[in-house]
Image (cartoon, rainbow, N blue to C red; front, side):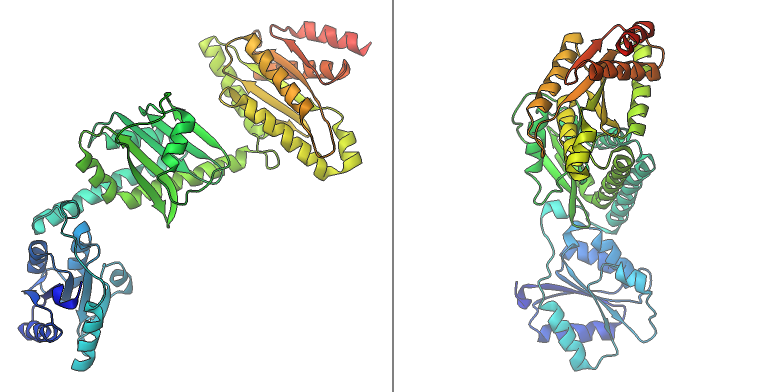
Length: 473
């Protein structure tokens, strides 16, 4: 767009300065010049005429030049418009408000005429323009601007209020979903949050499978963060595609930290407008959730293996036990120990030993995925808490598969095996008793040949003690 094609608006309560500025822009070849006598009329004229360049005095009766900038910048149509604020000798401008006013440039009226003309010519030559599309322009007068500003403040305040609950991410996501449903109904809605330690997908109605959901959502990002692990929440289907999926990328400081995806919105215009107006608050909310997740993972995960540490493992075990008692269900605990691990460390060094632990941990993590958690209990000892197994046979199959995979893995030093003890929670009053029973069975496996698992799904302490006494005699 050339200078002659641009529309310039001059806002100044001084008739003298309006005439001076009109003369300057006419000399520069600007053919479309509109004027306003104060800030209120400036906003009304801008809404009606949609100028590409706005030159406004700073100090005017009623609404100042800075206030007018703030109003206009709150409207998407004026996002890329060029705004200059002219200052007089008596104007004292706070640097903070000047920086956040939305003005592109401040120019002093005290400059010599030639210098002022030169500054304005350079400015108007830049690529500034106002959008004329309906999507970017949805207010018609100053009262609509004020109402829109109020709406935006309320939307942002509502979203930012969720930050205080950031420790409970599922609760926050559920509340955010409910918030969006005030503006539109959806046939499907999903949220993806990305941090280096973990990616999370919350699905509310999209019929996609877990892996397909991840792949499909990641397509809409240019340079997404690559999490080391993924978690999925909600009900996932088996479809490979959905029609009419709308997505909004969530960015924080230019980093893509999340995505909002939806289909079948009953009011696309409203939900799109809400997500646009509250984009900065949504980004701050998502970033806060990611930060809390990183802190949580850092405090709960073993640094070497990436499995849960003993403290988090025991916390989960206690919660699982209490829930099982309340629901009258059972769970399983499997204790593992790397066979002859001291010999590996003594012969090949601790670095090789660490690689062995990491490889075993990776196998445990893969096998337990979606069925419970894996943790490092201490040293070369690991623990599985299996919460989603259909029956004893399924547990046995999983444990034997783990033993086989470890047995057939090529470690840095060669071959390696693990021993295991497995119990169900049935008949035990406390999680401590369950884990002790599994540890006792692990001891039996170690003493009776290693590279094997010992099972007792309806164990009694006295029965285990009898077996232990026989092994010791």
